[in-house]
Figure 1: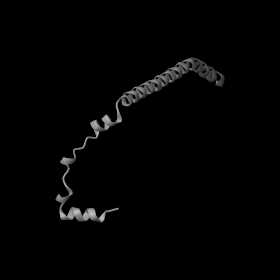
Figure 2 (figure 1 turned 90 degrees about the vertical axis):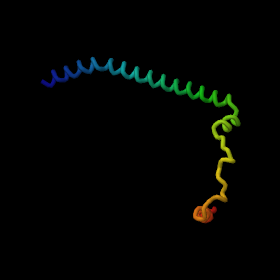
Figure 3 (figure 1 turned 120 degrees about the vertical axis):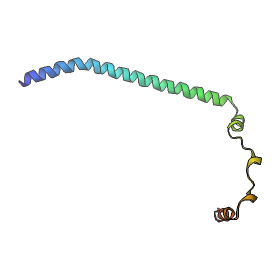
Length: 88
């Protein structure tokens, strides 16, 4: 009885082994493609940021209008006393 069970398992594994190898090869290929796509995207981003000057990047994204900020003299007494307590 045990010989027939081993024979059935052996036949099943002999059918599964090539399918598992194909599955593993597909997995390795997709991982390699994803890595290369990530490298290409990083290179494109690096080249596009390198092309722009750092000064223009900061002017575009970190533009602060100092006249739009409220002056500190308009703080209420409560807020100004809180700020005085946290001087480092």
